[in-house]
Structure formats: C-alpha cells, structure tokens
Picture 1 (tube, rainbow, N blue to C red):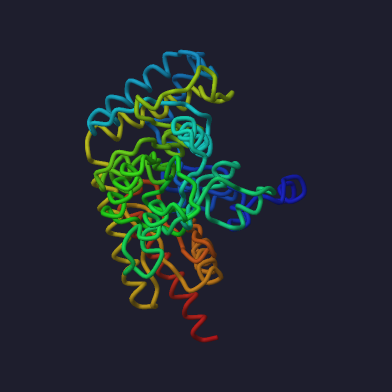
Picture 2 (cartoon, rainbow, N blue to C red; picture 1 turned 120 degrees about the horizontal axis):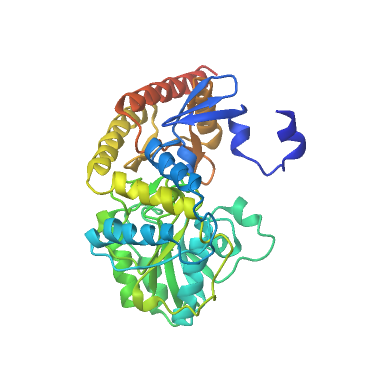
Length: 418
C-alpha cells in the first residue's frame, strides 16, 4: 500500500473507504490481491451496469483489438463508430420514438454536461442556467456551477456563476405547490432572475442522496420549460442505461428532453464514452466548435454496441432490474421501519438514509468488513447507497442484503448501547 500513500495525490477517495489492493473482477464480484472476494454494490459509481468483465462485451473488444482495428480516431469516421451509431439509433432511440442527433463531446459525463450547457447558451443567447438543490453534474467548472455540493464547489477556486438553484422535488415540506417559487420568479420582472437558457435536472439524484423526482413533478418541469422558452436538459449519466429500469430514466415520466447527457455505462464495460443527445433543430454547432482528443475511443464503441445488442433488444434486463429493485426495496423498508430510517430509490439505485454521515459511513465500513462494497451519498454522506450491476443475480442480491441488514443492526445496536 505504501506507493499509493507516498506517490499518489491526496485527492484519492474511494480507496480510503476500501483499504485493500484489488486485482480481479468478474460479474458482481471483486477480488483483492490476497484472493478475498467482495460483492460489489458500487458498480463503478454506475459505470458497470453490465458487471465486471462481462464476457460478451469483453470478447467483442478482444476480437476488435486482436484484429488491429482502429483504437483512437478523434471524430474521424470508423467502422466501429458507424456500427455504434446505427445500433444506438435502431435499439435505443427508434423504439422510443426519440429523434436525437448524437454528439461525442469527450470521454466523461462532465464533458457531456459542458457541451449541453454551452449549446443551450449558444441556441438561446442567454447565460443563466437553472439547476436544483443537491444536484451533481461533474467536476469541471461549468458542471460544478450547476452542482449543489459545497465541498465540491469549493474546489473550483473561483466564483461559479450564471447558475441559479431551485428546490428539487420534495426539497421543502412536501406540501408546497410544485415550482411555486420558480414560476413566481420567472413571471416577476422585479425578481432579479436572469432569463434562463436551460434547466438541468437528474430524474434521480445519485450523489445527492438517491432523491427520486416524481413523474408528475418531471412532467410539470417539462411543461414549465416549454412555456418559458427554456431548454430541458436531463443528466442521465448515472441513472441512464437501465439503472432505474427503462433505458432512459425519464421514460417513466413520459417526457422528451431537449438535450440528454449520457456516460458511465454507455461505455459498455467501464470504457470511457460520453454522448450529448440533442433535438435535430438544436444542432447549430460550427465544425470543431466543441472538440477534444478523446471523442473517438473505438473499443468503447464496440463494447457499447455489444451491450445494446445483448441487453436492449427485449425487456428482459429492464424487468429484472425492476424486480431486483423491489427485492432490495422491501428489505430497506423493513430496516427503515425497524430503526426509524428512510428508504429511498428506484430500480437498482437504492439508499438508506441515516441521521448523519458518521452513522452511514459506519454502516458502509461494517459492510466492507463483511465483504460488501457500498458507498455513501447525500450532502453530509448520510445515505448508504446500493447500486449493484444490473446483471446481479437474485441470490447475489439476497447475499448483499443479508450483509447490509447485519451491518445496520450492528452499528445501530452499538449506538443504542453507547
């Protein structure tokens, strides 16, 4: 472990929660260098929806690489990119009656968000963007400006401007009319609110604490955007690619965003890839106006194409995700009732909210000691977050829930006895 502590930057974080050296990973399991097995309810923060080293996706990439196919291509035309574009159009977009142009903004979710914000401002000629309390959209300056977490924002070192936060669904007391404050500001010439170019939203806030927006709230937001000429951007970086059940997390609400940001599991098996989807009439970019060196990572195109063909030509994965999500939800509901906690989530993005971050952190540590990887979320780290691969088996879910239950009882039992 010495080289990590002496040579790597202090900015590292996940390795502090899991102080072992990992060596292998298969499906929903990781193994440290001593051979100890860990059940993974973290899944690369949502980048591994199809599990570690998924054999179908891995073989597609191995075959591609062994044939000396193009690896890096910026935005040049390649066979791999053509196959991805055709497959994504035919499997992800067309069956859902979605008509989007596909932009490759760079390798990460923050790149997709930056491109969306830049495009919205270019289209509307406005500068201000509306974001929501407890949002997380990335660590680059534009993405940070629409992120809520004060610690992450503080790392910018400069003022983060041209963004105004509004209350997320159920942020207040649950009795205040949806968008009461937002709509009042938009309609009042004395409010001081600059006319927004866009609104950016997560349908489920992952890093913000597994906060789920109701379908009716999302529909109301989409309607508000239309009435006031604001573009609606859905950040589906963590909750897309089936994490909540459907391929896109906004499908349940029946809305069609103007712009959609995808990354994480769109890369298939943890490979870097990001997409910014935009309505065709919004595609007003000049050639090269937004670019980057790593927009054409062809092995990621190959893995993503294989994932789409393997998992999204029918509804088997979606139904399995919803069923296993309910399996987790039932156990979390029981734990919440037994200990006065709050169970949260949708699909296979689930959480258990504790009184404070110390307690949630202790539960995650107790789970790690018992061979389960899970992280905390929320503004104070008060939510223990469960995000296994979508390909996790029901037996593995049951095994993980057994560990979570034991960890919660152990930690809260100790607290009661203290």
